[in-house]
Length: 592
Ligand code: OXD
Ligand code: MN
Image (tube, rainbow, N blue to C red; front, side, top):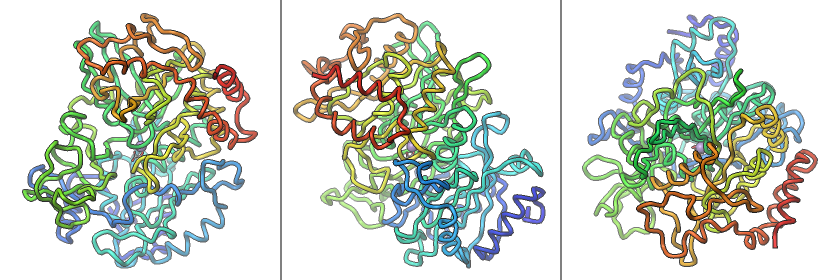
């Protein structure tokens, strides 16, 4: 197919305009076929950009430039006409000024390169919730990743017809000349730019993950969250799983945790409690909409996993390990001498020799890790051995419970049930977590990350809080129950108190039983907490005293957090809903 075969006048016009601006040597309209994927991979292997992995059929390793290894929140912009509409949690730029800056950068940026047109759908093509995007990129690495992460190809163009709505997503790796293996622009020339009032995305200068695979964070979260606000649905940074009890009852659970806090592990959990079965529906993004039955229905708009490799192992996530046995793209992992990938946390023993993520010889005496802490795998959802058969059901699945959670060594108990929807929204709005390597910046610093959406909310977060409250009003008694979990609480010796991973099903069981009103809890100012005997701890050997700490509401510690929490909420000024102010005031009254 060539650009002359395109029948959609707006798409044709946008493509022509982009070709004129970016000046590529060639244009390729992607059909999404396995042949297209194979040809691109062959070309990248021939150029030395992709390393085939003999131990994993159909799999390849890529190494990025050392400056281009994660999302860049500091270079991510929401361009609304009024600054206040982007809100205090986003970088803002005037749309006209941003367009002018980008025009200069994009000018002739694709000289000597091929421009790829990727028609993609977020969500199954037959779902009323789905949205179509078209990404134009000069990066073949982006094309192969989009093949896995979204539904790409001719069927999307057919659905679009000549008048269907699509979101234009323009991406260029940038003009940087330095690294022939991985082109990218210097940091101050990277722009991950969103125009939510026009539904347009423009990304320049980075080839990595969420900066470049524009269906993911840019479309399915930042733009979608703003669309959802306008249209009465929700776009959230959540995993989605189905849990089936020994009696055969199904529960659907969505979980919002910040990046690199274990969403993929929970989404693919292997329950340690006999008789409980888990199935994965998604690990990063959930779109949710109230249906005619009054319940909230949830759908994962992605088609693959872009997971953090370090820490993933047969012990922590055996299902992810099976998912990535073949047909997987690895980025910034280490390479073993016999042609496999390796990362910290994969095995107990470190190999005696590796090639590190920067292509240098590595031995275990080296201080620096062999794999980058934000090294990733890209694999199709269909390779997950516990993928739920309803993962691409056009209507989604009805949601029973929503979890919020983060990494918190102190303060937050193992699990808390919100007292009601407003309180649940308050728990989400005050989610606090220690930062990870998923963003370029400091690691391990505490930050408030409401609903794990700080980097992904495409409009003013005060309005986003109000949207959550409004959705609760709409759902009424059919609203999912809200919980706050923390697998990462540490004891005085700095060791984790809770085993996590498969044993998190013990917490999920309590959650399902709470949904059914079958199990006890005690009411505290921070929510309903299980008493020790409300949790199924059979066969688990917790350290003496661990449970007391895990189930402590942490009121004294919260008192210390209070100034930070108040400052966090105060940032939203007038846009902070009164109902959340009331929640904050009620909590303050209960602290010692
Ligand atoms: C991701 C992230 O890649 O949140 O999912 O950074
Ligand atoms: Mn994420």
